[in-house]
Length: 119
Length: 119
Image (tube, rainbow over the protein chains, first blue to last red):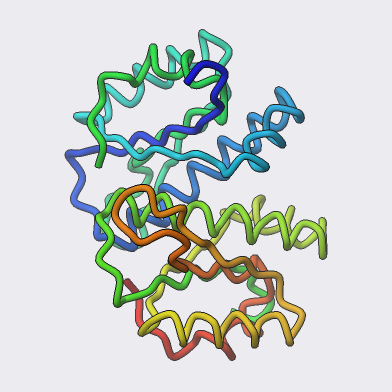
């Protein structure tokens, strides 16, 4: 839909994270990226909250694709945040796990992540 | 640890949600509950963000247990938020899926959720 505001959470398909671990990492990315969006546009962030916080969880092949999307989002001026896991449990320390993009204009995010599959 | 601030996300073990769906619902609960915490104590919410946003994902047996925990948290003055799913995909409309509790003092949350198992 034109004008829709959404957030996309991109997870790494190559990491074996349990359901709870994945959920916590996605929540981390979601909140960090929300705080970035709020810095850029308080009104857009507020509108996203008030219209139901649309969130989509998709997967990328690995760290390389995540980093590429992160750099592209930053270049386009789209608020985003990368989660590094402390690595206390299932993963090696400082593993990049999830990229949060937005909340931002859906059509701008789709240019970056529109081809990625849902988790 | 005494004085630790954390957030607990309680999901329903009786719902069959896919990994991505679950992650999005947990992220929803996390953000809503964070915004409640921020209303109660801006400094506590900020401290949680700055100390790494500790999040734990646990499971409850079903809607009854989730509602009971929600009522208890409210009674104790602990910031919390209940997520209702719009039900456009995997679930019937308005299904309660996740309860977010905190960020708040860990020992106070533990009184409510300390016996729940990790997801």
